[in-house]
Image (tube, rainbow, N blue to C red; front, side, top):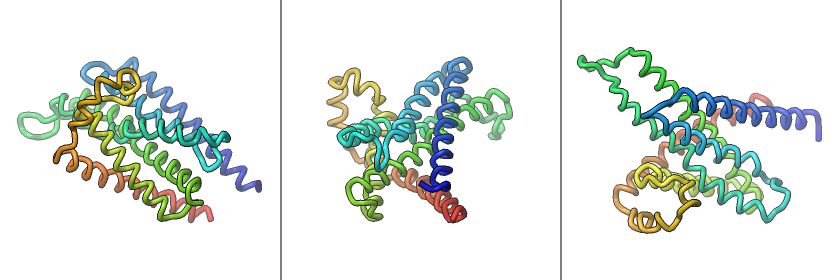
Length: 229
C-alpha cells in the first residue's frame, strides 16, 4: 500500500467518523428540541441513518467472512428506503401554515427553524444514502462481475426501483422497516394488495427523482477523482 492509498484510507475512516459524530449530535439535538407535530423526525432520521452505517461495513473485501456479505446487503436494502423517504417528509411543512392571507410566505422564525430541521435531516440522510447506494452497488458488482460497468448500472437501477417501492410502503401503508421485524404478519395483506396504478406512478416518479440525485452525486465524485488524478 503506497502513501497515497494510506492517505485515502485515513480520509475515508475520518469521514465515516465525522458522519457518525454528526448524526449522534443531530439525533441528540432533535430528541430535546423537536416536538409534536414534528416528533416523527427523530425516528425517521435515525432510520435514515441506519443504511449509511450498514454500508460502512460492506465492500469488495468486507466483511472478511464471505457468507456475511449477502445477509448484510439484504439488511441494508430493507433499511435503505428510509434514507430517500425523508424527502417525502418535507410535505409535513404544510402543518406550519407557511402562507399568509396575502399568499406570500410568512417570515415567522418558527417556520424557518423547522424548515431547517427538516432540510438537514432530509438532505443528510438522502445524499449520504445515495452515497451508500453507490458504494454498495459497486461492492455487489465487484463480487458478482468483477466491477463490470453494465452490471453495476443494472444493480443501481434494481436497488433504486426496490427502494421506491419501499418508500411507497412506508409513506402510504405506514409500515416502517422496524415493524416488519417486530410484527410481520400484520402487514402481509396490505403488501399483497398494494399493487395498483397509483403505486406504479409513484414508483416511476420516485425512481426518476432518486436517479437524478444519484447522477448529480456521481458527477461530483467523478470530478473529484479526476481532480485528484
